[in-house]
Image 1 (cartoon, rainbow, N blue to C red):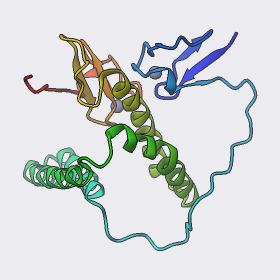
Image 2: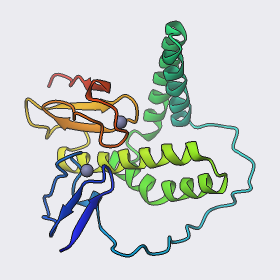
Image 3: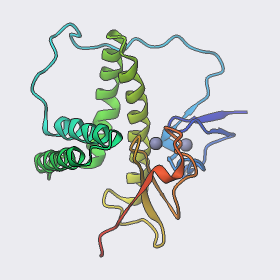
Image 4: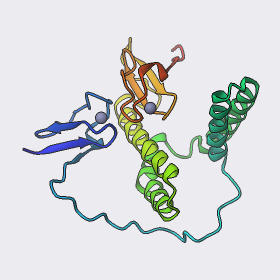
Length: 206
Ligand SMILES: [Zn+2]
Ligand SMILES: [Zn+2]
């Protein structure tokens, strides 16, 4: 029998995959599923661009936003509330900058497609080259999160307009996994933290 594995959460579906299939664990669509290979095939070599190049010192607004929100999380773990708030403020500032750059240029779907087809293979290759296990792990997580997000956008629209009444958007505060449902999943399908680590996103009034 044919088997398909969810690339987000690892759920295995036995039999043919219906066109409108939704992963019962993480909510990803059929495009997130890959046929289970019975025999391990040798990993395809990913071409990468000049890995020996010196690291870029200038960060984009979106990178700055990610760095600042990571620093905010670090401050939170050390109970440095004041520092946490300042980094959060900075993260929001850079996020708005980044959004202004992207506004009207590319859709969220286009950006996600670019990330998944170009940036992740490159980043994986660079992390492997540097034997950076931390980077590898966070790439695995964020790639799963991006895959799940792509499914959600396809199903509910980039603005979430097609989310049924009564359902909410939940975001895992650890890995960023986004879930749409009546309540958050018991365990994050990507990073395995319990449901209380999920934050409910308040929807703007229509
Ligand atoms: Zn899944
Ligand atoms: Zn998570």
